[in-house]
Image 1 (tube, one colour):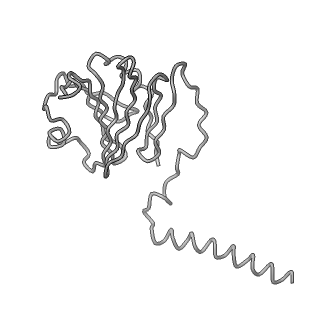
Image 2 (cartoon, rainbow, N blue to C red; image 1 turned 45 degrees about the vertical axis):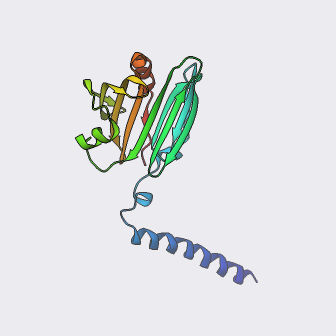
Amino acid sequence: MRYKAAIIIGISIIGFFLYFFILHSLFPTSKYFDKKIAVTQSLELNVPAGTMPYKNLLLHFFLFYPDDLQKKEYTGGSDSTITFNNAETGRGFQIFVVPYSEDRIVPEQFKKDLPSGVIEDPVEILIDGAPAIMFYSKDAVMGDTREVWFIKNGFLYEVTTYRDLDAWLSAIMQSWRFLEF
């Protein structure tokens, strides 16, 4: 009886290892086997006073946002929108994310996502080490806006707020961190 149990356990262990070695050989460049997932590490966060943490594993980012804002997430097809708003104060910002295969933002993308075509005072900045462009624009609904656009991890991120909330948004964007997979 002991030998039968030992044989079953041995076969199970061998099967387990073969399963993963076979999968690894079938998908040698798969991101699921070749890279460590940093987000599984425990994050000991020192949450700044007056903020809440926001983490999105699918869109590969993390940030702190003011705790008086209500967060809502919308998904449509391949794109996602996350809004952070306070209806009483009118403060808020929006993050629009879409899969993106280019290594820079092409003019056609600006035309598609920025119907006004207005890009005023563009400035190159870094968001957690990723090159970004920050500029003023105009939106048919919001009026004058402050925008921050950047590419990372196969996504184009477009962050928008009202123009007069520029400094407020800058403080939030300083907490932005990419989750590397």
